[in-house]
Length: 592
Image (cartoon, rainbow, N blue to C red; front, side, top):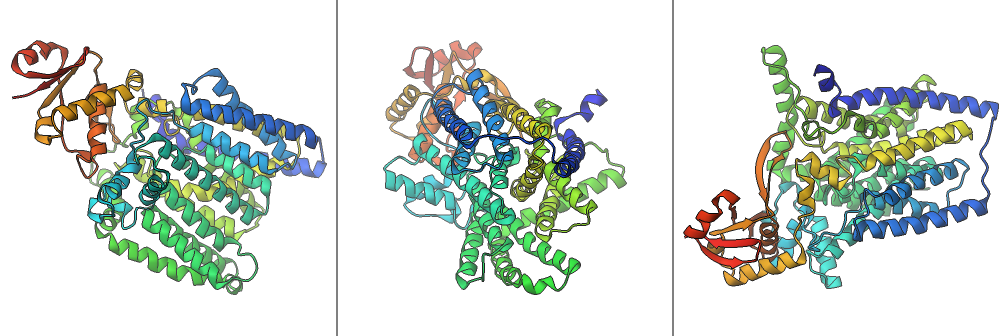
């Protein structure tokens, strides 16, 4: 039992991190020796590689469409296409190929990995639409209606979604609009990482690898958070202007940087991590060589407005600032009490530990960090200092280490601390450089190892609790049968008829009681391992969504709580309550 506890998912992450770092470091050293010996090389004709990439793009387009429209995920063809992409692309990158079509293939592959299936009710109601609905219903933005204060004072994604709804004529809750935004955000994120890596390393192959690595990094799932991801894209663009400005710095560059960082910070406060990068950059520059400070004066010039904007955002949202500032102090206090005051020391398990996610899944969660650590270790032993790379690494490490300790030793968050999302973006260029250095050896053996690494990682993605939809629901304790019971358009029609029968009166709707032969009782696992009893019925779900669309909510929560009748109480309900509607296998009662 103790062995299984030790091999829990969360606790396996640092173990895999250490093991993988050593392995990648050894591969780096082996790649340098292979270069010196000028051993076997891998050659591929341009015509052959071009045909392979074109065929792959066609397969990926088919795969993306099938994943969205049909039950294609978890099928053998899906698995084959998912594995085929890295099997073709990694060796091509090793030969020096870096065509635009390869970038297209990688972006399609990324989207195939994350694309959710089309919901049967064709509604795209997620956390991302709450504030959009407020804008649409009130025809303006009301800050007091924000369902989460951290998305104030300007809900960027909500505004974009509302604007697209107006321009396209699609309802704000339509699934087509949801997919347009998912595709746009994924494309923006991939192109930003490619541009950032290429700008920093002047290597297109490394840029392609950066996009592939990001697609395999659970922390960087672009569909996980509707507000955090765009903020990350904007401040990564801002950071890229700090890394290697082309030619003489212009005043317009500073204005663009200020706009990008302002937008990122106003969209989501995790963009605060961007404030740490220039501070770390200047500190390391001072330690390594003070004379370099004059060369990087533009960083000092950018730091002041970034700090001003960040402090304004922190002060503006005082309640959220107190919450963020209090969180690490609570973690330290809780840990100190348990260690020094005789309190019982028991690490808090994450949601994924409580739901039995296998320990080996941690391999994927430590992949990006271990590739970056191997590169830094390689440079340290060679006594070679690259200020930019070290600054990115240290900035990311501060937040990742802090977040991991807080999340595993205290009760902080579900996914091992959300701030790690932004920080992991900084490690992607380093991880890409590590991979590119190993591939540059042109050794068939090393190239085969790295190709196998990406292929096996793509298999793990399909069973990852953060990336795979079915695994996410299973991790939260939702039975698989519930997924096949999601509301359909026919259920929405029934829900609309109920609203019509009650004339949309909330007092009447709140007195409704449902019975369904297909209802499912289960316990949903919360972020901290607590179980909440749930009864799921398709018609109730459809009614909640219909009421949400009509605006019958308090902030983002349903304004009513609808009761369900269990089979043993059905006969009593028939006698005690009047029946509003009989849908065959589903009954709707009105309580007196």
